[in-house]
Length: 344
Image 1: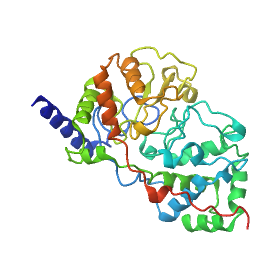
Image 2 (image 1 turned 30 degrees about the horizontal axis):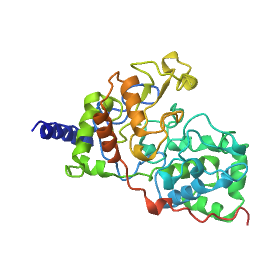
Image 3 (image 1 turned 135 degrees about the vertical axis):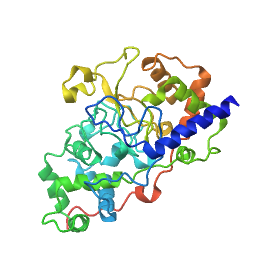
Image 4 (image 1 turned 45 degrees about the vertical axis):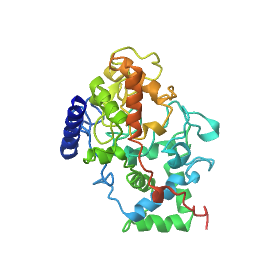
């Protein structure tokens, strides 16, 4: 009886979040709640991550899909967005840090792009407000795709008739639609439809049978431990910023986190709280990719963030519940497209 009562209360909170979970947003400057409602409230995925400033059209989405897969947006023509965010592998490359131009390695783990358009901001330090702005960063980063300038990117895109026509269709009425900003808008539009509905969403919509008994217990352990204070909302995370090492000093402090963006001491070691959707499939974990398994990540969060060591059973149950957050990949969106020739 106690189990059923606890489950009922969880479901009530979850269903309440469906109606109100998007009303308490906090922008990238905050460390508290982001879009997702009060701590512990959850919400199911929408059909798409809509944007008033970048309305979605099929022409824009299809252009963004081709650009996402096209390595010719990199200086050497060998690195694409998909190189580090492999859409067939839940949007990650499975490495602690990714390899970019001329074999260089980054300093942070490449997070999944699935469902990321719903986050409060982009990058681990939140330096980009949305996926459109984020799409510009890797193209120009000398360690990643290493293009010399936005003008060089535009010249490559304008060198083929296919792209000239595709940009015109995606951005009708513009005198010169082939621009660096429009490239980012197209990639952003594509990423806004990369959502992965899961059994968790069916549970949030009222299907109590979709989770196993172990997963129900894992959800209750997750909430009882206090994990849902940060990992809540539609992304089960991704909606706020938090200092790594709240309860106990994190052992590795080389990366200052959001401090590098804001220069504010209170932002030192502050990072965006990662979404737990598809966490089962997106190892290794944390900003530096230093944790190899989901179980170890759960234990570290309980120890360093909550000062609440978990039993082996709780860890197993929480890990089992997180498997219910593994979603269905949008197969029709992520099939690698035929890329146009570079020159007419």
